Structure formats: C-alpha cells, structure tokens
Length: 308
Image (spheres, one colour):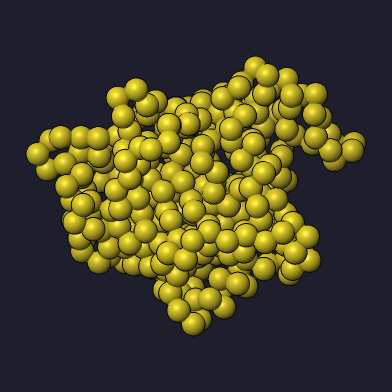
C-alpha cells in the first residue's frame, strides 16, 4: 500500500504541479473555528461519543479541489469541506466531503488511470478528449460524478453549498443495532450560485473573502444529515448513486463561528482523515476509503519535508 500511496500522490503532483508546503489536492483552503452539537436522534443511531449531544469544539476547512493553490476561485472545480471534531475523552474524529454527490471511481487503481486519462497534454495544456472518452466508456460508473462536476453552477459562497460524504459508514447504536449511511452537510441558508461570467469577474479569492466577511458579522450554520441505506444499496462503492427517497435523519448542527488562527501555523499540520472514527462508527470495505490514510501520510511527509 505504501507504493500505491506514493503513486496516488505522484499522480496529483503530475496533474497540478508540485507546490511546497501545500496539500497535493484541495491545496487552497480556509480554516475556520466551529462547534458541533449532535441531536437526540444521533444517539439513537450510534453510540459514538461525539453523537451523544454535547456541544463540542471543531475546526472546519473549506477548499477548492485543485492541487494548485494559485488557481482562482472562479475556476470550475469541486469544492470540499472537512470537519474535525474534538472528542470529549480526547482525540478527534474527521468528516470529509465534496460538493459532488458521488466519487469518480471505485478503486485506487482506477483513480490512477482516471488521473492519467485527464492529464493535460504537455504541449498544448489541453485535455485529450479521446483518452477521457475511452476511460468513460470503460468506466460508466464515472459518468455521474463527471457530469456533476461539469454542470454544477459556480458557488456564491462556501457557506451556501451542500457537501456530501462520498463514503458510507456503519453506525452502531448502544444496543448493537446498526445501519449503514452516508452523510450530507446542508447549509441553513440553502444553496446559492452565480453565473460563470460573474464568478470569472470576481476577485481570484472571492470565496475566501466572502466567507471572511460573512463570519465577521454572524456564524454560518449547517446541519449534518445521515442518508440511511436500504438493503440493496451499495455501501462500499463511492460511485454508487442511491435511489431517491432514502430516509434522512438530522444528527448534528455544525456552526462555523469565525476564522481559525490556532492551527496550521508555525509548522502545525492538520490532517482530516475520514478513517479516523470512534467506537460506534465502522468503516466499510470501500477501497477508496481505505486508500486515503496512506496517501495523506505521503502528502504530509512531502509538504513538511519529513522522510516518508
């Protein structure tokens, strides 16, 4: 897995360039202070300690998907969110999601092939659409995420986007009963978008500026929902599109209270790893989920110049 982890990070650097001190993907981001408060319904679904109702400290990082921190916010891109919750007994757990409803591929090996297919031609800087088309023909499960990425409107604000957990987890209650579910982080104020032309005309950092201005006057609220899987839903496939109408349960409120200045400074490294889960939440066999920790370790080692 170590070799695969290196290859995954190498592929990102090949696509986006190497930018010392930055993440290999989601390089441009904004760290915020937040609180996380579970609802009573959360404790019915899971015995996890952060889902028992206490108001907990958290950090939230909003980001653009690109691995180049210099790419303007007005560039079409998937957006990301990562929530780190500080647990009552010590330690943390992380929630990571995208503005896309599903992921592009099922396995790390397919991710390497997908990244190679969409690597721009060095001579022209343009995609080779024949290579992209061939990959999509061989991997129809990739089409929903690509379609969503191409057609998604430009966001007005990081705080006016719905984010989706592309991985399912098994939530285990105190009595041992369990349900698989995916999470969604939904803004209190609803989703809002602007035209492509307006986004291109705005400041290159307009999403960061808008969020800073917003948080200077009031918190930004989100609610965390679990979408409960039914028996036939694929829970180990991040490309799977579950049918409409699955039961959703609101399990927490996330309130983003301001910009954070206490982490990711003076050499402090903050890693958001969705496999870092407490008792009461279990991982599925999802290959992409299991590949993430190794890739994060390689990325951290490289951006801190530590030996890998």
